[in-house]
Image (cartoon, rainbow, N blue to C red; front, side):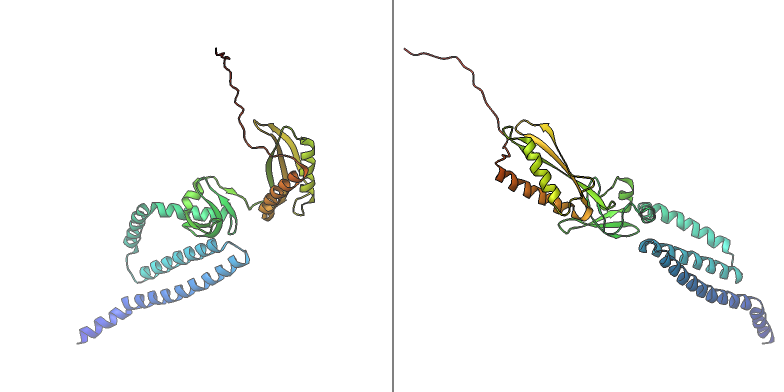
Amino acid sequence: MEKFITDVKTFFTTAGLKILLGIVIIILGLLACKIVKTLLKRALARGKRDEAMSHFIVSLTDIILKIIVLVCALATMGINTASIITVLGTCGVAIGLALKDSLGNLASGVLIIYNKPFKKGDYIETPEVSGKVSTINLFNTVLLTADNKEIVVPNGTLASEHIINYSTMATRRVELKFGISYDNDYKQAKEIILDICNAHEAVLKDPEPMCRLSEHGDNALILTVRVWTANDKYWDVYYDIVERVKDAFDAAGIGIPYPQLDVHLHGSDKTSD
């Protein structure tokens, strides 16, 4: 009995104290992790960082700190942490190989969020898809098409392809082509088009609207029109000018010809008795 009591005292005075100290380190460490997480969230919020990027930084920092706390606590308890770190490293390599595509998308997502080639609300186009950016996640980006379809694109795909962002610049150029008959006066047609462009409330005066005869087509003279407008007014200006030019051409008697083909037949005359 005395030996048992002695062994218990020895345990609590040696290993027991180490275990108790390890538990204290875990409790205080987790509390410190929570404080650091809160402070980091506030700092990123003040810096107006992207929401997805902020969430990723906070989560990654929290995981790293908790691993450090756990390793310190185990080392204090007298447990050999070298083998644990080796096992974690081996597992990390195995998981990395198994999830290499997902990790590639994750890395691409971090780069997209950091470099910001596009943001939520932008209208972008890739060689395969186009749409308005709805959500930017760490692994994928969600686009909404013009007919309200949802497209989920892996971030690795977006990072490896060229992207056209139609929403980056404040202004955008509208280019239209109109064909008129060779019998019509192209100078009169130019004047009509420029009057319509200059009268449109959404067309910018600087740069000023331009209309030039650009091509002698097979069936028509081609007039090219270029005007500038605010980015969000692009389609309004596009359709308004098309409709108003058609009405003005009809009123002025300027024809928009249909494609036509002239066929000339050559043959010898025959006489009959």
